[in-house]
Structures are given as structure tokens and as C-alpha cells.
Image 1 (cartoon, rainbow, N blue to C red):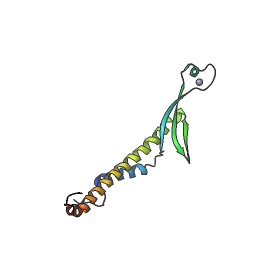
Image 2: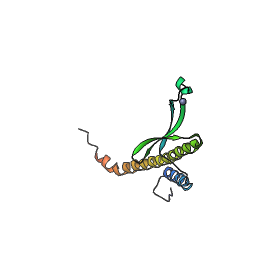
Image 3: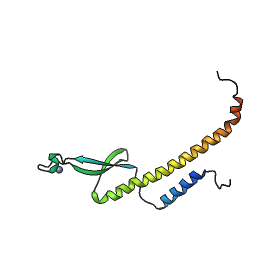
Image 4: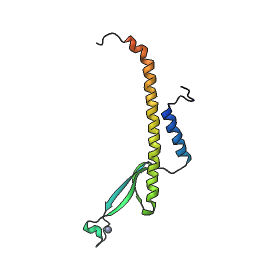
Length: 124
Ligand SMILES: [Zn+2]
């Protein structure tokens, strides 16, 4: 089987997709989208009767602290794409990791073959 690199095919596929993704230079953020229902405290507001204000937040680490960043309605699409883009990157890195680990396990099995054949004596 001819191959140009030491990497398994699965890894190379994920890697080239990752490179395309990074080349597109889309912003990404390691964050989660959270919706929260709150009451504003204004007298006579619908939220006082239990119909709370539902808003979207980005839960993320900013510097050393975790923040809940309010997402204004006109920035919801951007906030969603930030999270989706980092998830795509993570998924591809995970595929590369799995492929490399599978490769490692196969390599290890090959290098352990002589040892295994030596271990024919019964276990204590
Ligand atoms: Zn209110």
C-alpha cells in the first residue's frame, strides 16, 4: 500500500479538512450557548407574572474567569457560528487523535509480538 506519510488515511482526511477549515479563517470560540430565563424586576412587567425574559448567553472562559456573556439578538448568528466552528475543529482533532491512537495500538501490538510469544509459560 503506497502512502506519502506515516499518518493513517483517516488522520490525513481529517487533517486536510481541518486545514481547509483553518484556511477559511472563521472566528471560533470555546464556549457553550446557554438560554436563561430571568425577571427584570420592573413593576408590572410580564416577568413578574412568571413570563420571564429568555436570553441567550455564551458561557465561556475569558482570561482566568468564567463568564456568561449576554448575546444580543442581532449577534445570535455570530455566537452560534463561533461555537459551531470550534466544534468542527474539535471533531476533526478528535478524529485525528483516534486515528493516531489506533495506529499506536497497532504499532504496539507488532512490537509486543516477540514478548507475547515468550510469555507462553502459565500465569502465576
Ligand atoms: Zn421583566
